[in-house]
Amino acid sequence: MSNEHSSVLLEEVLQAFEGVELKTFFEGTLGAGGHAKAILSAHPEIESYLACDRDPNAHRIAKEVLAPFGKKVELIRGSYSELNRFLDEREIESIDGYFIDIGVSSMQIDKAERGFSFRFEGPLDMRMDPTADLTAAIIVNEYSQKELERIFWEYGEERQSRRAAEAIVKMRKNRRIETTTELIEVVKPVLHWGKMHPATLIFQALRIAVNDELGELEKGIDAAIKRLSPGGRMAVISFHSLEDRIAKHRLKDVEFKKKSGEGCLKIITKKPICPSPEECRINPRARSAKLRVAEKVC
Ligand SMILES: C[S@@+](CC[C@H](N)C(=O)[O-])C[C@H]1O[C@@H](n2cnc3c(N)ncnc32)[C@H](O)[C@@H]1O
Image 1 (cartoon, rainbow, N blue to C red):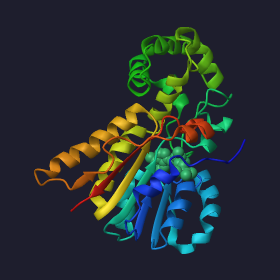
Image 2 (tube, rainbow, N blue to C red):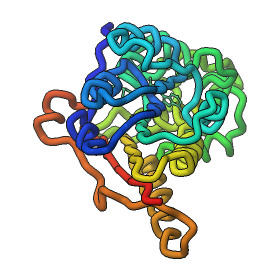
Image 3 (cartoon, protein in one colour):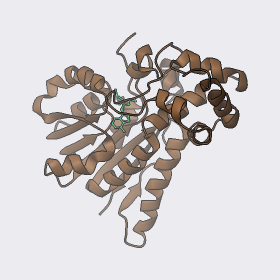
Image 4 (cartoon, helix red, strand yellow):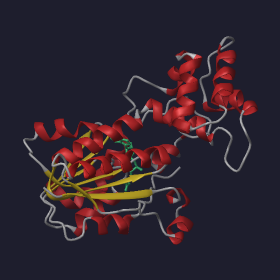
């Protein structure tokens, strides 16, 4: 199992901040620090780089990667939706750059014991923050059938959400479902076999629910818009349509309000930027990535 994580759309992210004077930068999803290293190298003017992640393992890895940048970098353990609190605590009024690259890292998905992947036997955990209360096992074993169905439908867009929820509730009358393999065995017979592993969407849905990923994204984008300084830029990489839809509408709404004097955002990427075929060939996990960039204009 490796700690390697290829940073997606790296050149495109650098281009998003090209020509912007970045004194204070907030990155919400530090991971292995690949984007952070590239941004810090391209912008020697950065005085303060606040690098946040929920996962202490990410900090352990990124700390080494970012050591050459010394005291400019501050690692923050927590959720990026708490941007306002992080800035208030440090008496920082505004930031010149904001970046999130949401979802799980390769380090998380490739570790069987984190329970993120249907490819490995592991506990039904899926927490990005290992100290958080909610695990996938709690959702699978304790949520009502209706709630399970909603999660599979809303966060996985799984067409067999009702049948999957029914199968889980039926099985749990006999025993708890504790591992990834046990869950797959329960839902597999009622799901479609296509190009993807049949449990792909069920796992995606559980992961999103455990980590409140869509709620984080909404709160994170709103806070970023509020705290960007005029001329500051924000870049958001998402990995599936649910996330991209939120990013697109959140940014558009604010841009639209600009006309009535309420918002001050200009969308730089009219269409999202996607990885080149070459990047997808080298890093198949980049396939579904989409980058959206916006600028605060007043
Ligand atoms: C795709 S990886 C980021 C990779 C990073 N850009 C790099 O170059 O290595 C996503 C990271 O974001 C973290 N993460 C996801 N949602 C988060 C949230 N709401 N708050 C803080 N960290 C989050 C995950 O723990 C994971 O380490």
